[in-house]
Length: 255
Ligand code: 6PG
Image (cartoon, rainbow, N blue to C red; front, side, top):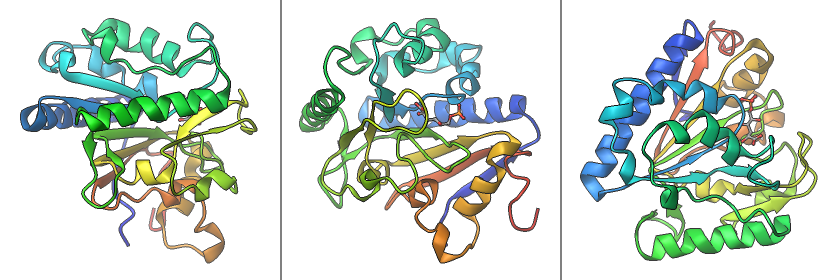
């Protein structure tokens, strides 16, 4: 059963420190190997939990100019809108470290969700062609160095919600939905094949409201839970790590 490494932390402070250390180490390894670090991030509480990266020593030791930043999912709203993951990340993180604005790959916010998804996939394809983004050894999928995900209490990750047809997407890398149960309704999202082709995937989950979903996503459970989006996160060749606080881990078997 390879449902990943569980890193359970006493509190958010410890989790934030471990997460920053983890990201900094992966960045260093990727830059050493390929000269770049390709990272996709999600929205929600994740951005705040990454905050330690803006502080010493990481603000100085991380090779920010080598980062290429993508979105695992994004809300189809203006980049200036309070719901925009780009805005959240920019205000909370990216504006505080010397990333290159030209390496921040945000979505086209002036078109429909469908077009935004197509544009984003096209853009990712260009960067795969030039090998800025690595390519999977077993499919033609992009192989991001790291994809960071949050998880909702319903077990959704990125904008892949329970029972949604996009969970079955096999061909597209980026797809769109217009019926997100979590507002705002229009979103673009990486598909499972892309998430599962990454070198590293981390799911960052805190709080008691998510304890049941963490249990269903990682423990041995009945067949009816097998299609929980978070449970479908299983990097084929990559490494999966769960960053949990004590509360999110409180319903795990054996806890
Ligand atoms: C989004 C996210 C989404 C998020 C989870 C968890 O844009 O809505 O990418 O997948 O990560 O909903 O959000 P919280 O950590 O805020 O609960």
